[in-house]
Each structure stands twice: as C-alpha cells, then as structure tokens.
Length: 520
Image (cartoon, helix red, strand yellow):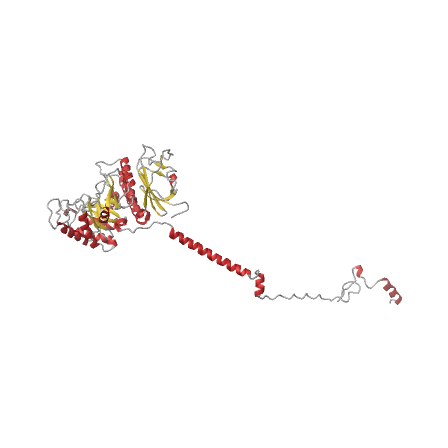
C-alpha cells in the first residue's frame, strides 16, 4: 500500500501531458494532438460535400450571337453561301457554252451502200461448188457474219443477150427460179444483191425497136420486185448516158420507199477519168450513186512493188469527185501484197468492193479441214496445216477490218490526210530530207490518217521487202502512243509507240492513236 506522500511526489516528477515525447497522447474528438486541443478534434472526419453541378441549358439568342461574333457573322455566312452557288452556276454555264460553241464534226447521215462492204462474185465459180446457186445460198449467213453487206452478182446474163429480155439468165449459171430463191435467201440473211449488167448489150448496137426503153424498164421493174437492191453498169455502156439514167432513176424511185430499201446505180470506172454526163457534174452526182474505181491499173503481168506503190500514192494524192467511191483492187500484184491491198481498201474513204477470195470461202475452208484430217497422199500434212493457218488468218483479217470499219466513225466518214514522212531502214536513223522515201533506192512507205474529232486512225503500208522503222521526227504533231487495231499478219496486239515501231516486209498496220493518259 502506497503512501499518499509518495504518490504526490511521483506526480510532481511525471507530467500528465507527454505529447512532446511522442507517446502517451491520445487524440480524442476535437483534439489536434497539441496542448489544449485533444478534446475538441472529432473522432470521424466527415466527407467533403459535393460541389453544386451546373445544369445544361441551350444558349439564348443573345448568348449565341455573342459567341458567334455578333449579328454580322450571319450576314457574312449568307454572303459566302451565295458566292459559292453563283460560282458553281458560272462554271456550269461556262462548260455548257464551251461544249455548245466548240467546233465539232457533224456526222452526215450515210446510206446503206455507204456503210457496207460489197462482195463481187459469180455464182458458178468452181470455188463455190458444183451446185452453184445452192452452195452460195448456204454461205449467205457466213458471209454476213464476216461483215459483208451486199453482193454484186456477175455473169448472170449473156453479153450478146437479146436487149428485149434481160429477165432470161444464163442457164449455165442458174435458172430463173434459182436466182429468185437466192434473192429471197439473201434478204433473209440481211444481204443486199446488186445485179451486174456491165458490158451487157441492153440497148443493142444495131437497129433498135421503138419500144426498147420501155422493155428495159419493165425488165428492171421485174428484178426490183424480186428484191434486187440495184444494178451495176460500166462507163462504156450505152446505159451510161444522162437520158437513160434519168429513166432508170424514175424506175428506182418507185421502189425506194424506205431509206434502207433505196435502190442504187453502180458505175464501174474502166477509164482513167470517169466521163461526165453532158458535162453536168450536178446531174452526174444525182444519177449515179456509187463509182467503182480500181486501185491498180490493168496489166498483163503482176505489178512490181514500186509500181504498186506509185499507183497507190497517185490515188492518195488525188482529190476525188463528189460521187461516192467504191474501191477495188483491179489489177494484179504479187501474192505478198494481197493482204496489204485489202487493208488499204478497207481503210480508204468510200465503200470497199472485195472480189471473190477463196481464202475466206467457207466451202474451201471446209474441204481443206477434211483433207487435213484424212491426210492426203499428194501433199504433206505440214502443207495443209500452213494453208489452214493462212486461211484462218485471212478470215480474221477480213473480219477485223470490216467490223472496225462498221463501228468506227473515223473509218466511215472521217477526214483523210496523206502523210509524207521520213523512214529509216532496219531501224537505223535516216538523214533524208522531207520526202516520202527514206532514200531514192528504198521502197516507198505510205501512210495516211483518218480523223474524226479527237479520234485518229493511222494506216502504215510497207510495200518493200525490207524492215523499216519510223523516224521519230516524221510527224511531231501526232500522238506518240497508240493501240493496234489490225495488221496483215494479225500478230500485232496491245499498245505501241510510234518511235519504236518497225514495219515488217509487205506489212500494213492500222493503229488507233491516243494522247498520253487517254484511252478514248
């Protein structure tokens, strides 16, 4: 038991507040741990009260105008929108004005004979077959698929036939019912038929009956009723006169009720210059629809490459008359130039007239395939294979040219421009002056351009036996790039550059030119 005196003494030595020594202090509510603050500190610290949230509400008009810069901003925005639409309308009006006022070619409506390819043949040709008319009837859909639009039937009438009756055909070429059947089948296949009266003595050279003209007109009406699309005569025939052609025109007009059924008169030009009808050029253009001209002159032997080049260049440099031309080869040339002349005919202004070609004859191709499969003993199989490849290439070339001509406006009625240019033999540069030939001894390289608007077709013809490259400076105004349309070997595909192009011997090429980055 302790004594009170000892307790008081101990109390005096140990103070109750020991906060300064780091222990013995107990913080209570309201106490801060310091002297005199332990009894005022709360035991739990309350969480801070959340701040008052701002409730969203739309701006007033005054606040919106103040934020947008004031009332003037609305006027500025309306002014800018007005300027935008006015500028857009001005651009649109300018574009329309440029399109309307810019010069562009006007397409002249073409008649059916100006758009089609003529095919000239005799129904009794050995290549057609022993049955003659029947074999030809079977080939009509095939000929139409090649792009042929009209047939010119030759040799149906005797040269010395009676002028009183031209409805009587040569029996060896087919009877009248067979000819009528051919006309019916041709119309079904979409092929026009023109009867050739060239050098047929329609009006007689001796005593003429008084009603001869009426008899001939009745015969013309007979064939027109059978569906004949027209008649062909020579410029040396008695029918080639203003008086007779006026009578024929009156008969043809009676059967030309529709545009696609219009009947025509074709004149084969056998002389260097077509004789004028009483020196009346206007009557000449109205009385004659088509003038068939030969590219090559008649010759007893095939013409050389230089002679062919000279004849072609003469026609290219000669401005033709207003009458619609129909080009045919006419004279004879070497076999190497056959495809080149075909390309030339199909790309010249006018309607091409192709003479019968056994390479595109369906009967010949069929017989060749049969012979190749059976393996004839007389000829090796390689020979038959080469012939078959050549025929297929000829058909492909003909089809490519005819279809390109049918769908391309530039080849139908585009302008024609002859292009003299420099060439280089074997792709070496040439220093020749501005002339068509690279040197006096080199073969002629001919070229011309068919243009319609911004579309250009370039036709290049190499009639010589050597490889030729084009001089880069030959035509600086032409686009450099182009795409192959057709070629004699049918081995040119895709795009090309004129500066790297090489013409093979006896090769013709058709190229569609376009500007860089354009594919029109």
